[in-house]
Length: 444
Image (cartoon, rainbow, N blue to C red; front, side, top):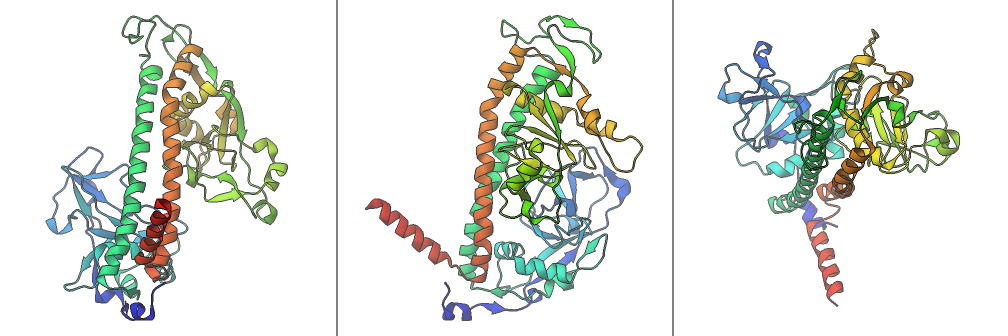
């Protein structure tokens, strides 16, 4: 705990005393392009829910660019507008990364943080301050708009936090930064492992270049191909339906007015927002209680089930890491053989465009019902090749699951420490003392 003397050193002033927030430029849409250029236009879509930077499907720009609206590595920006229902990213910060050969452009809907001369707040400390509950509540309380939420520089700058001495700011930031770096590293490793497994899948099951009996690529080595309704396939393979892979389960939501299903809950309840950027649905926003098992036992999914979003946002795919439920927007496959798990996972990812096309049946909302999903034609390889792929991918997926579990533990630790460190309830010296005592106890 911080002493009264320590707390007296904390300064409570509006952020306007330390920083300015600069709006970006309205880059002309006629110069937006899908072709890769040196210029990447940043938008609120580059801010992670809860804060942080993401670069998914970058928007390129090939018009004239003024240097005034080019970000530098390490710049902090905040989302000034938000289209989401709950304003998930409004006011949250992100840091501009380094990407060799690329420039990041400052869009009008982002606010760039500019530190005033002799500011007594450090960039890293401000970054974490903008993750706190108090800051978040301030931004939401003074936001405007209904469908689209807005904030402004003046509204953000009116927030008045207590700012500790520079030395304490640096110590707090270092702890949170180190946790964040470890989390980011785990995400990168998991992504690489998935990409390796997916590359093997495509090589074997899309290009048909799986190893033949001599260890040579099947198709390019003259392997026999036969005709099928889905085009030429290797001899011994066949066309089947999705429901050949296993049981198809459409999820369900228990009545929300019956709290028994939502109290003391520990069973993951997977919904589409939980399916983004995860291989395994280790962490879900909602959980259900054991009462849900009695209410809808047939909807309970075992570990290693493949969940596919089929309404609204179609084609998202995750695997269950333990017994789980999903809502009715998701169809799931419970593979009837263990060796089908990873093949089915990647097959569903490859079918995304097909799923979207089938779900676009004239209605405003995409909808692929369970029967349509079950009846999709697929290529079913020979048992031997599926078994060999399973053994190849298994160690990669085990590592991904371990990484995701460790990452969620680190996120929980970071999110627990954040408010305590920022409020002064917990001091860095307290953590160091506890670590020191732990080390001494082990040595004795």
